[in-house]
Image 1 (tube, rainbow, N blue to C red):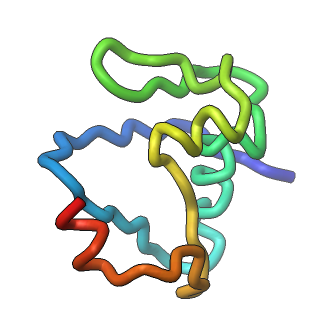
Image 2 (tube, helix red, strand yellow):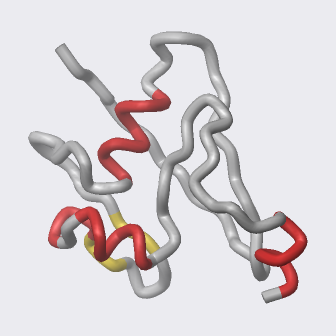
Amino acid sequence: MVSVQSIIFSFQQAGAELRAIIGPNGAGKTTMMDIITGKTKPDTGTVTYGTPGKNLLQMNESTIARLALAANFNGQRFLKIKVCSIILS
């Protein structure tokens, strides 16, 4: 059983930033990220990103990834470049 009742996640991004979601085991972090990144589709509700809000539920995973929305769990490396290179680009 997967259950995410209500999440409002909003922030203003200023340039190249990295954001993290933290919380105890079983809090729903992975489920939330699976929904945001398109891996899991919710039964009801909306998932929007940006201004104006783009409906992520109408996009596939690769399109969402091109918006720079991705999940990286347990410190796994998915890029082999230094953080400084990302910030400076």
